[in-house]
Length: 390
Image (cartoon, rainbow, N blue to C red; front, side, top):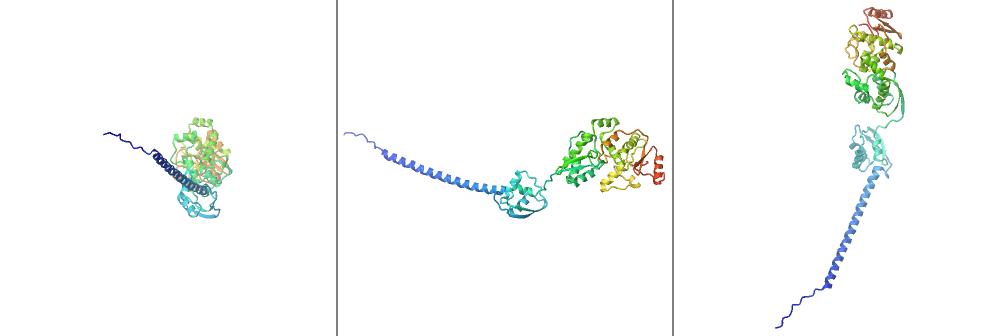
């Protein structure tokens, strides 16, 4: 029997190719559809984001908004959240969260001033934040500080001229770290806890020009810089030659300034105090009325009329009851008073008395009391005057 070879079936190649072509066509259609969907999605998202950006930008920069005026009330000590809520409720802004983010990004100080304001939608976020702040004052002011003004009087002068606040000046005077050699020396030597103002004596009296929006630190620094120019290296060396610190010389100069009726008396008065300071075993106390007046005026706000009993009051600045110089300067002395403190004339005077603008110095207590009796008909037991008997 003849064997026949098995016949291998022939695959329909053409049909397979046709099938394959059909599959590729389907994939192409799907890809096209996906691409179209993606493009449409991107376009929708883009349009949406564009609208959001446009709306937020319009709200932030006020490109096209209502210019209708709206009155809003900002409460005292208002926070950023409270201000944002006021603006949102009055339809001034549409995106409160964006507004707050903007304020934080711009490092806004958020020190809002309470009050009623008129605003409108055409104001940008920056304009709105600025609208509720204290407006900066511009311009230049020339101010003359009289010689011998106390620190309190200088502060009051600046505040009355529209520069700074009393609280701001006190804080700067007491705490601000200025970089001057005389203040470093003051700190190194120690500051008495009874001293009223740390910078007493160093706020040099002169004529200055200030911007009205100057900070308190800027103002005080200008006065200190002028002091550094006036109190020269030679003055510093003279202080050391006397055996005094710079602060002690300035304290003495301030007393001379306040005790004198005119600059012509500076050197005589300086000699009286130097004589007392050089003879502490006989005259341990300076006995200056002006030192008492300084502390009493600082505490009451009014210049007192001293009586005999005031000379015995328990005050740190009372040089009738305390030995030597007071805890610090009692005024901000002039250059002439500083010079007098460093250049006293040679005398044997330990007392002086004023009468109608004339000074009457005395060497002894008896002479001093005789002068007092002559002009005021006092007895030798009564003591008064600018520098009285012990």
